[in-house]
Length: 215
Image: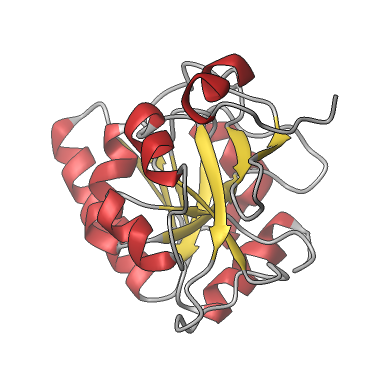
């Protein structure tokens, strides 16, 4: 049975975080707020949960799921190396709307989809999300919507699209800014912008110098 918690109420917020963490550990799905849009989340290390997430969204493993983390240390454990620019970018823009693509730690037993040995990681600037991630560890999180539909900016919109496929909805009110995160690929010698978003390209250049864009 689906449960929704109003995070503006301190008692409900605490109960919701406890329930959501339990749901994640059990291999089921939740919806959580972030600093961009609402996300649908699963334990990153439970392949059946990640498959359920993709099924709920109506998409396949050819579109792999990004990972949200609650600490920089957690991010470091997921990757082979932060590389030349990773730490500087993290220091400048995390938590915030910047997703960084790294070569994944080859010792990890997980299946996020057809990642080609990479992992896309972000630390969101939202206290509910951060508090949950510190309890659950890294979570596979994608926008809370059916594939092809607009991302949900409220918990109600997410529930309309995802319904009973999600066990717990954490409702923190409308998103303040629905601009998606900027995605920056750090797996090549020159950082490459894969998607423009919340962090402007000129600010990224101020940290890394030259980077490649579609232009």
